[in-house]
Length: 350
Ligand code: TXA
Ligand code: MG
Image 1 (spheres, rainbow, N blue to C red):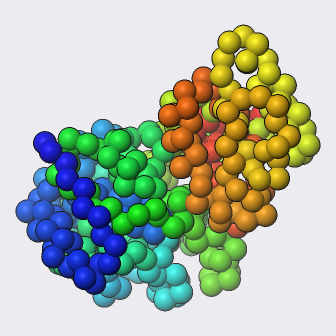
Image 2 (cartoon, rainbow, N blue to C red):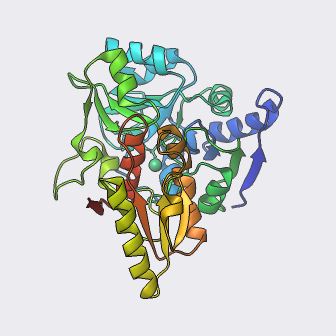
């Protein structure tokens, strides 16, 4: 299959191009499109066969459910039932935006989307191309991140090309995505809202609207063997560049010393180290390929650069990656969750 890439700089003036993508969605095809978080791989959420094609293109395990994207709040009453009052408050405050709410599903939602669960994830993205695509398609769009399963999520159309070329007919290129990590996944089916995946809508932001919020213990810890999961996505290795990653956290001074020592040791043995650093520390390293995620006092900036840097390391042929830990406040929790998972929870605490 030949994959075409169409650049959309002005969604209002390029309705014709987006209509082409919408028509592909309507005919049961899979199309990649930009959202404010990462690029998504979309198909008609109400068409089981189309949804099956997403799993095929990504190589995604069939038991990992997809998020449904809508362009208008009125649409969720077709997809979800017993919607709690908190969900309306959250939608009012954070939609369109990087928040996915897990709710009880209606019968309209095919089992293929929810991987057999009786709940469904719904979100309204805040990207003009995504909104236009969903409204022109006139169907809700199921979309995971547009990477091959296990790889870092795409924040540039070029990343989607790397992973999806020849697998899908069309990629809409809307430039670099703003937030850079995937949406916050919040389960609202229990008595207290539960964060299953931290993201651009931070725990602090959620608390300001609904008060008490719990964070699932597996956000920063691996699953125990045989443990049943609330979110199937927690089971799988994610976001991994080609080289193995180690997350180093704790006292910053000790982090830098440890990383310097390990990088030098590696180099002496003939292995090239990649160091995922920050603006504050990058000049303190003596060896290895050094990339900065940004200013550690600006967690949103770190989130915006994280996947980009992980993919950059692939092009630089490093043999192993040492990643600095950052503060888990605000978007920092999402950054640490993604690095911990990229590292397969291989974490050094100092
Ligand atoms: O920002 C995002 O959310 C991006 C863009 C494209 O919208 N999408 C995305 O989708 O990250 P995906 O498929 O890569 O991640 C969806 C996560 C998975 O961890 C999945 O297990 C969880 O959401 N999830 C989806 N439906 C669920 C459900 N009913 N119950 C629990 N977890 C669910
Ligand atoms: Mg993903």
